[in-house]
Image (tube, rainbow, N blue to C red; front, side):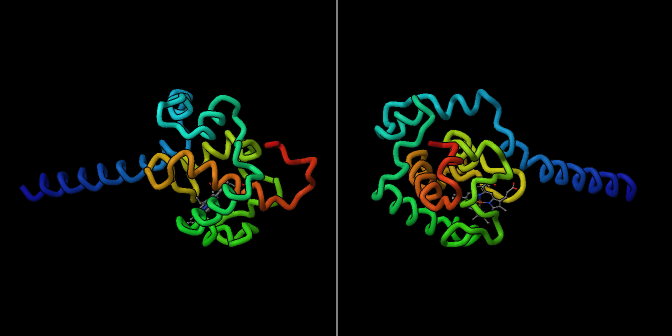
Length: 158
Ligand code: HEC
C-alpha cells in the first residue's frame, strides 16, 4: 500500500516537473506557421500595422508621436526597468548599440517576433500573452530604434 502511494506521488512530481520544463519552449521558438499567422493582414489592423505586414518595415520609426507613445508603453510594461530608461542596459542587455544577442533584432520584423513571442532567457511573450497589441509593439520598436547610438550606416532596419 505505502509503496504504491509513494510511486503515485513520485509520478505526480515527475509530471509537474515535465509541465514546468516544457513551458518556455513555445515562446522561444515559434514555428513559421505561427509567425505567418500573426503577420497575416486582418480587418481591424491599423494602417501602420497593415503596412508593416506588407513591407516588414515599421512605419512608426522616426515618427515623434509614435516614439513618445512607445516610450510611455515601454515604461508602463517595464521595458525600461530591465533595459534602463535610455535602453543602455541593466538586467536586460543594451538595445542602443546595434550589436544583438539575437541577430534577428537587427530588423523590425525580427524585433517584432522577439516582442511578440519572447525569448527563452528572460523576455516575456508580450504579444502572445496579450499584454501588448501588435500596433503597440510597433510603437515600442520605434522608441527602441530612436535610442540607437551606433553608426547610422549600421542601422540595419532602415
Ligand atoms: C524582466 C526584465 C525584462 C523586461 C521587463 C524586458 N526585458 Fe527585454 N530582455 C531582458 C533580458 C534578460 C533579455 C535577454 C534575453 C535572452 O538572452 O534570451 C532581453 C532581451 C531583449 C531584446 C533582445 C536583445 C538582443 O540583444 O537580441 C530586446 C529587443 C528586448 N529585450 C526588448 C524589450 C522591450 C521592448 C521590453 C518591453 C516590452 C522588454 N525588453 C522588457 C529582460 C527584460
